Length: 527
Image: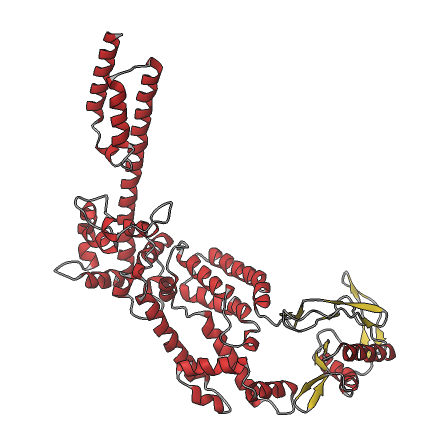
């Protein structure tokens, strides 16, 4: 304890004289919590001595205390007012001031039940009745719904995600494992804070969206990417798994707690009455095959984690199989684990190309056909034809990588380095390609660059021909020609515009100009 404590004040490096402190403790001293608990112990005993609390088994609980936060509990409005009166008397006796601005009243009930309209007073101050209140970092709602807390942590998780994104951009060579560690240590604890109280089956909601957002950011994928694919390549399990582990950790802590503790009494009440929290835990443990361990004093965390990993890996496989968009992904992705291309130091553009190809969001014709354009019309697979090569070939991932004639020179250049020599199946080609990561990245960058240039040239040609057509139309309009030229213009428009500009590329511009000049001469002679 303290004895003859002296203090001095430092201002601009100059110390004042020493003076004796007869009350209080040093800032941040470990003794402060213990001394405060001893100081208010009399108040807690006085509040619990009456019949104004809530019933828990054979006991009445009127107050919960954690550090300097005190919660008064009562089943009636009169009981709560009596507790407030006792608190005011004790504070007056020991010269303690309560911050009435932070002191609120909350009536816990269901939505159908009306809120109380009674005014509660602490001394002469009327306390506000609120629908929500943050206690120990958890935003409590009067209906005890958990979504209120999840919505509240949105701001915190945005700040945390922003921090790791800034660190990633500052450290340009940050690997996937370091990035994952940052996410698990700085963001996941925020997303999981307080979830163990509500139980393992509470939907993660916004938390899962954050998980998907961060994974897409690292791989630089669009929103259209299939989440089961990019989470599988990152090797990330759903946030539900961490939630379940937190619930079981709380269960193990409660089993070790002394029976006379209030928290243990509440836990025993939940278990004995098979409340929703306990039933949800039983269901999850039954799903993973270790239900028998619930009746023991402790659930083995190592075994549970292994079973949960297997359980979510099987669910991941089911989701992959059920995605028609991932028909190519299923040929080479068999396990839920972080892929080598994610862990490697591929340039970002190459890593994004590889990830887009694997996750079914590389904008090939088969992917564009999934959305069908403006009206979200599904285009049959057989109509998703490659525009770069001769023949009616569907432009899917296999055609793009191994068969399209337009990329023949690039494919020959990379064939030996990618292990394409000999008669190999498509699955073997995928395995060889992804086994040679840096060659794979360069190969895909070369293919995509050639495809991009082809479409840029096509677009440039289309714009040029449209400009030329507009010039002819303007010339006809100015000279007010009639007769055959009108038919010719209509034919031009039908051929070039009516079939999505495809025929425009096949128009022989020289021949068309000759015919138009001939018609102009004929019209001028008639005039």
